[in-house]
Length: 156
Image (cartoon, rainbow, N blue to C red; front, top):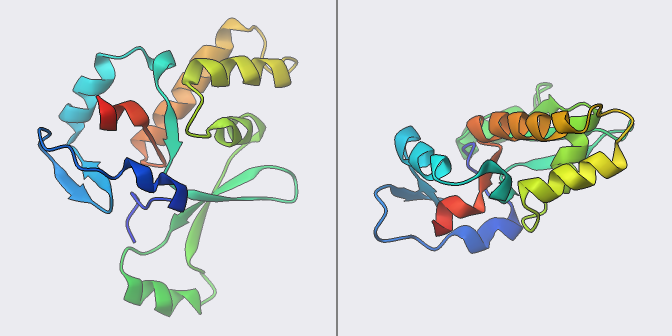
């Protein structure tokens, strides 16, 4: 399974857009870096709607681990699922990263995520102006690593 694996609730993103140059792969339109950058440059980052592409699990400390499949092919996944390494690579998030990840629900825009994060973690995020920068930097990192995507890429 590749890194662009969709969660079951993400299947409504799959209709191919005929005018776009790119391959349709597992319900996602695979675009090159320049095509994605052109779309993202024309939109205000705070108006984007993030969508999770990876599964996650909650740890005992209340933090999130993103589950990155270790292998793309099903055969190797079956072989290594029985080994001590396991089927997934765990990406550990800190408290703020976990809070942002949980706020991504396919409905909220980045600006709404910033507002809710500031309300719930005001003591940890000082000054409030830094919240938008921290959230957008974190979401940019997640997008670059293909753990999330943005709904506007598919409809824009």
